[in-house]
Structure formats: C-alpha cells, structure tokens
Image (cartoon, rainbow, N blue to C red):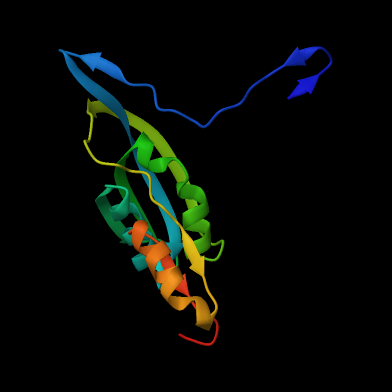
Length: 143
C-alpha cells in the first residue's frame, strides 16, 4: 500500500510461538460463543475441525446458548467467517488469551475448496476434486 511516501506490505497473520524448556509452545485462547440453539451443532463441528476443546455449554437467553472452547490461536485464524456463515450472521464471539501450551502437531488450516461442474464435465471435475480431499463438488440440478 502506497500513501504519502510510505510503502507497507501486509502479509497473512502468523502466530508468535515461544520456546519453553526446549519445547515449542503456542498461545491458547478461551473462546466464548453465543449462538441460536438451531446452529449450536454446526458451531461445535467448526471448533472440532480446528482442534478446539469444549469447556462448557449452557443455555443463555431464550432460544440461544453460550459455549466456551479452549482453542489454539492458529485455530482462530479465519474462524469468524466460518462462524458467521454457519449461523447466518447470528454468532457473537469473544476470545481471551489463556496460556501457552505445547505446539499441536496438526494442520489447522481448513480448506474450503469448491468444485462447480457441468453434467458433461463430471469425470474431469471428480478427478480435480480428488486431489484436494476437503473439496466439495456441486453439479447444477443435482442435490
């Protein structure tokens, strides 16, 4: 971004890790999410995909629930859009840094590849989607 003689380069967010007793550690956060009762299942599923651990689930106000999760900061990157999509914009999330724990050796980057296709290109699209195991396939006119 150039403006008034300054030049900035912005990159993707990265988590700052620490070395504690010779072990690589990362920050963990407590995420408190308030959602309608109808979409609590999809919220739990999203956190589970990102290796979040549910601490508490309780009714909050009539028709909504409050869930507490313990999740690595890496798992929170990009989570907001997934939550808003799953709950149709009805999720409210607050997160607080709790502590640093040992690095989780899993890939927390969740792919959202989507493979649209026409009926006559179905074999080609299936082979393309096969390369990305997280890809979803959609063909017009089919459920």
